[in-house]
Structure formats: C-alpha cells, structure tokens
Length: 306
Image (tube, rainbow, N blue to C red; front, side, top):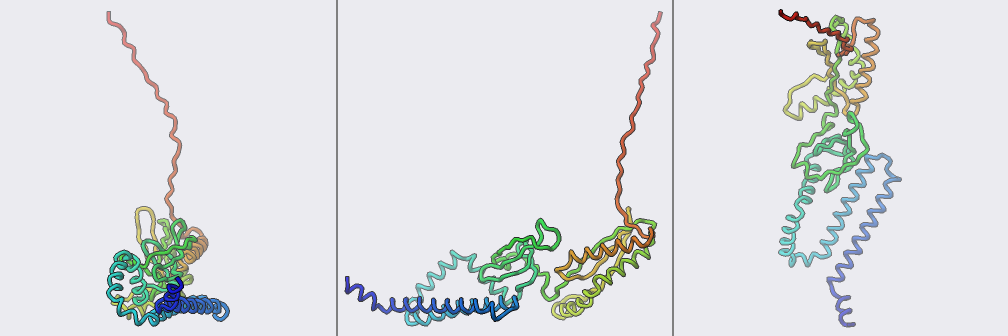
C-alpha cells in the first residue's frame, strides 16, 4: 500500500494535474480581483462592461494555454484520441457548436453589439449581453404597446443568426421612418390643414432630420442603396369618408412613442385654434330605437248565400 502511494505521489501525470489545478485557481483569483477593482476604477457602465468581458475572455484563454503548456509533451500521444472524442462531442453538441459559431459570426460580422435594438427569433429588445452561447435581450413589446420595455430578460441561442433574419434597428442608421395619419373632414380648409401639419412636424422632429442626413449619407456610401428623403413630408389622399393626411418623418429608434405623443398633442392644439376651419373627422354611427308598429287586421265578413 505504501509503495502504491509513493508511486502515485511521484507519478509525473499526477504532478501535472496538481500543477494545472493550482494554476487555474490562481488565474481565477486574479480574474475575480480584476473584476472587483473595475467597479472603483471605471465609472462608465459601457466601458466597465466591455472591460469585464475582456478580462473574462483573457482568463479563459490563459487557463487553456497554461494547461496546454503543462501537458505539451503528452499531446502528441493523444492526437488520435482527441480526434475521435472531438468528432463525438461535435455530433452530440451540434447546437452548442452552432451557438459558438454564431458568436464568432456576431463578433466578426458585426451583426449587432451591446446596446443595439434588434429582433431575433421573433423577439424584439435591446442587447444587454453577448455571451459565447447566448445573446441576452431586455425585451420590448408583447403586452406592452409600442417599443417599450416589458421587464422580461430573454436569452437567445447565438445559432439563431444562421436560421432566421436578424433585424437591427440601430446599426449604421440609428433612426426609423415613422408615420401618423390625421383624418380631416370634407369641407375643411385642406391648404391650412397641410400648412399646420407641416409646421408641427418640422418643429417636433426637425432636429432628427438634420442628424439623420449625415447618418444616411454614410449608409448610402456603405451599401448599394438609393438616396432617400429624410426631411418630414405631409401627403394627402381622399377616400369615401374624409381627407387623410399622412405625416412621414424620421425619428430616434428609442423615441417613437414619445414623438407620436408630442405630434398628436401639438396637432390637436393647433387645430383647436382654427375655430372650425379644420376639423378632425370620425366615423359616427347612431342607432335609434325602432318605433312601435301598429298593425290592424281587418276582416271582411261575407254574407251567407240564400
């Protein structure tokens, strides 16, 4: 028994395993210490997050390299075994492998980055973390109207980038085209209505148009795409019920709901000042009670024949 323990303790492989465990523990302690020190040294949340991710990735890489160096003389004998085991692992964990490949594609292909608003697998939200296997979103929509947070945090496998379209609301062009429609009664002053709507939209989102011009110019230079108007525009069509004015404008992708609220508030205020020259149209259906029907049946009496 004693000789067995001596052989086990002085076995070179056992020594390498012990050295590997100690080395990995030291690396983990260093990474943990650096993570804690970031909170005091870096105040900006985005910079602190990226620094944490970089330190974590460097720690994993250092651990793998350390173990590789410790067992470098044994790797040549294990090449075939590693090949067979790797093929089996790749088949059994193909979804995991696809997620890792997706992470590489996201990192190198710039599909999206932290802070972008995206739609992945039918789920829309802001990207708050990109891991090796999963992307974490702060979800928007669902039971909450418009593009507001609903409070759910969703984790989506990175393999989705190979299976479904990736919608990015903020890459290269952090603006969206949006529209609001205003129905106006027939008989209203349509020229005055157009003037009011154009003035309101210019005042509300004119700054966005100035910012969007430069961003859109970069998109046109980067992609094969035709130039597009980013200034607010008002158009009108006439249907069976009213004149329908449509306001088209660009807006920050995070401020669609707030901007619509500002637009409709200003429009209603300005139309009230026209003293009825411009009035909002609506469909009104009035159901009245059916009057009582007085039905009298008269029957002619026939005299009997003699």
